[in-house]
Image (tube, rainbow, N blue to C red; front, top):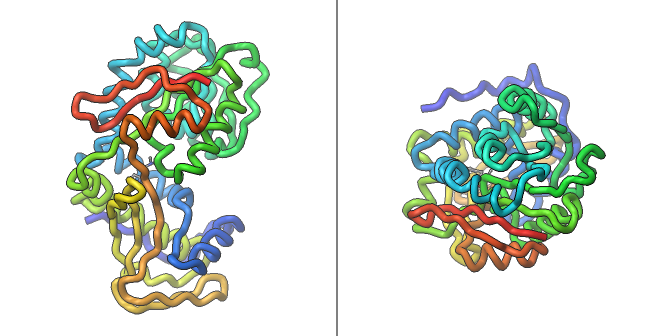
Length: 319
Ligand code: AVI
């Protein structure tokens, strides 16, 4: 059982107005939904790091193995001297495998969290002393202005983790197109995508026996209570991961286990037993749908490296 944070409101950080408006709008709609990006407060980021080590959560392990094995081929195809631009670099744990293998001219991690960015850039600076590193604190969902120092270098975008799967296809296409604006024509993109597979593997990956993913999901309600001064009865909700075959995605929901109500910023919300708040989508792709997505986003796929069990694929594409 995980230790749960207490829910006192004494040290509440100042409320982010965008968080409040997303929560109020999302709970007012039917069915209720809150965007997954609000999972990642400090506690949520810690829990996500724990998820990546879980036995059931194969994507991180499998993708890291693929990067270890295939980065030299990426280097051969992409050629030396590219500036590697990582979208949503976070703690950059997978990046060294790529940087070691491809002789880059610079590394540009982009992340919305300045703390993460500075920490990981400092760590990589020690591991790669001769490599120029230019961290950019920005939201990669919008076009990003890259540092002038790498203006003339050919670029290799890097987007691991199957984070593209957290977007509905229409938004994923917008993001892929935005990456071309950021990187320029002639750029390449190395992207990780999780594959469609048996529900018996997918559901446990998002509903692990130790309850870490459940806590990650429930932390969203705790965060609402902490930061928005709300009184959501967290104990009356349970985590649910379900496969939606129509959309080829795992969905995470918070299910009300009884009729309940709560108040956020003066607005009262009522739910009946069995109602849910939809908190995340994680789309899965087969090789053809992955290539179609990349092509719709303006990228021509040039290589795919799946693992031997067909769990996860790395794609190299060019703009
Ligand atoms: C960040 N993202 C790719 C993860 C995923 O697999 O969709 C987030 C996650 N949610 C629950 N477990 C992991």
